[in-house]
Length: 187
Ligand SMILES: [Zn+2]
Image (cartoon, rainbow, N blue to C red; front, side, top):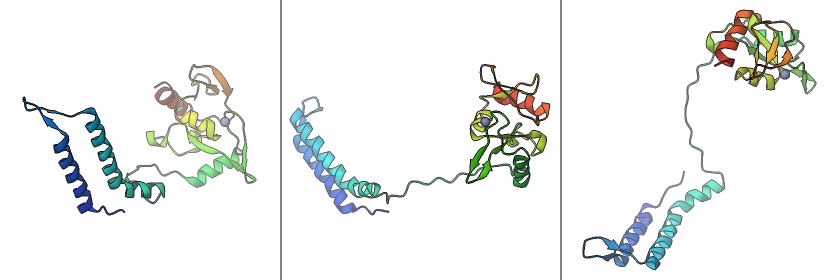
């Protein structure tokens, strides 16, 4: 935190006001005029004052010592069964059920589980509602950029409805595929 020196700060404002009174010319109709040169002088003065006032804060910002403003938010999140998620990933060999990729991080498989009917939409945390996906297909599926066609429950389509992949089994339950297709992809 920086503590501003208020007496100095006030002094600068008073000085600016004083100066302004001297350079303004009062017209007969009660309005004021200022010459361009005087306006520029005043503008530069004000810039100097701002620098005096803001400099301590700017220096702290440059040194990255000025703490960012913090906002407290409350997040409601469904609790998922990590053990089940890990078991499903292992059973499906960490292979993306859309593109077939298996990622390896430090010698261990890496994949993400996706709930076809999202937990946030009252989807169930069960095997039949899960897909094992690579991070790319996870995000595309999450945002409804791709979907599984409910017609055959295996054709993976892009936003234009064009087949891009064939889903690698196991196939999730049809009602969850329909839910994702109608409420997330088509929306
Ligand atoms: Zn993938």
